[in-house]
Length: 168
Image (cartoon, rainbow, N blue to C red; front, side):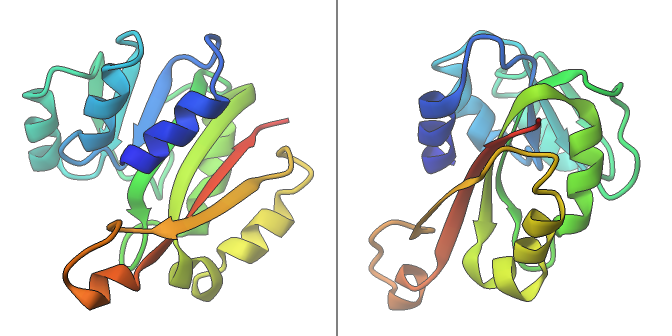
């Protein structure tokens, strides 16, 4: 979540609102972003229990329980930025949700996503980026360790790809 916040702050503009935290979970990304931004932050997650925990952090203007693999309850071109950390990984969301996210984000809207590096290749994210290249700006990719430096060696081997781009 911290790395996504760094990228968001680097690439975002004041017009990138409202912000949608995809896979908000317990609100870790929202908590970090809310320390630096206004409160126009929406969290969405499939788990109401996770959203109940996020609600206690008081960092979201609203929380929505919804399955992101289906049509989500937002109008076309209504979201200014989409952030997501820890959602595009093993057993969670795949690249098939990009079409729905592109539907709801405004033209020029910012995406800041973290994608597990193994899943990036294995689950078709690379191909999806090629398939949507005419709908988005050239993505910026940066790889980093998922858990920073960690005492457990296997944690140090987990890599994340941060991707930042805008809808055309």
